[in-house]
Length: 448
Ligand SMILES: *[C@@H]1O[C@H](CO)[C@@H](O)[C@H](O)[C@H]1NC(C)=O
Ligand SMILES: *[C@@H]1O[C@H](CO)[C@@H](O)[C@H](O)[C@H]1NC(C)=O
Ligand SMILES: *[C@@H]1O[C@H](CO)[C@@H](O)[C@H](O)[C@H]1NC(C)=O
Ligand SMILES: *[C@@H]1O[C@H](CO)[C@@H](O)[C@H](O)[C@H]1NC(C)=O
Ligand SMILES: *[C@@H]1O[C@H](CO)[C@@H](O)[C@H](O)[C@H]1NC(C)=O
Image (tube, rainbow, N blue to C red; front, side, top):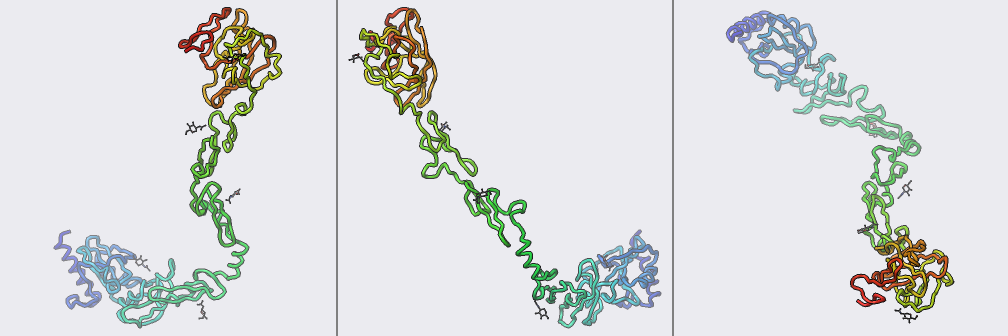
């Protein structure tokens, strides 16, 4: 549709409208149509109409109708439930439309339930004259239209008295106080609540004393995950669990391992965990970590100190350990003094240390402190380096070894001592040729 045709139709329409309403647009009265303008945002209904006067009649039949926009290009009218006077901010230019105020019997805004107002100002602007009184509003109680008093006396601003609404916007047991632009509710004496709902105070007290809410049962917890929650009447408190520190709402792990004094034994490692710690005795020590001991055999043993027990000290007499009352099965023994300091760990010549069957350890000594190995001790006799053998336990103590020995079963056998790991000849099976370890000379191999 070209602009010229639009213009012609509009002119015709305006003339027809003027004929119907018997008003002359040329005089520019406020009641006349306004070409190229519209009221935005207040359309409650539409109608297809070839000419605007169809809409004029339709508008007269609906109490809500305050004005309408005629959409020339769509030959449609849009019925508004406001006038441009009520909502000047929504009255805007639009080349497709013309604005028509209702010509006859316009219902004043807010005067009937079907046409509620939003503010007192709107009524004042729409109707021009301000009369204080009750009007219908859509904005006082949500979802429903209620009558409330409009105070039109104040100059400039007009206030809705929400407290004039019946039934009250507050609880039945509350006082309502109107303020400019709003209101508040206060529960009457003997009642508690926010004013929109009020409870008899006695119920509040019953709740307080008998129906106490258990804050501790809330999820997520009101306390830290590592805190105990204790409910009290009307409140609660939080206590960090053992191993944690803080105010109960926030609990941090305590590093017990860095505490002073040390929480574990001096011979234990400490390991911190969340909320706790544990102690582990260092290798060789026994105990629960809070208390660690060296192996008891390092403190409690029987001395073997006879000089003739030394491997290279063959006095010529034949001595038998079986007849020595200090030998008892599974007791711990230490070589000291003239007997040497340890046992040899290779086959030594028979008839060493003033006996027939000379002993040696057929295995390794423990290589770390306070550890124990179990191995065998051999007796060299005849043509056999290990003519008979016994179980032996060896513990490395601080600077020495102790041996868990068995009482020999026959004569003559003897537990022989050496000074160190290389301090003896090799006793080859069947021969007593003295061959020293490299670096050792002589018989005994004490020359270095
Ligand atoms: C008035 O029109 C507006 C905009 O279309 C609409 O939201 C409102 O519901 C109408 N009011 C009534 C009472 O019909
Ligand atoms: C509520 O209103 C009554 C009557 O006006 C008054 O006596 C009472 O003190 C008011 N109570 C409160 C809590 O405002
Ligand atoms: C936390 O609660 C547990 C279990 O009820 C209890 O054993 C512990 O002693 C409490 N700890 C504290 C710090 O209250
Ligand atoms: C103890 O701590 C030391 C040094 O941190 C570590 O080398 C060792 O393996 C730990 N021992 C044990 C039993 O945890
Ligand atoms: C050998 O034995 C004698 C006495 O039996 C003793 O005096 C001497 O010190 C011993 N020799 C060694 C090297 O132990």
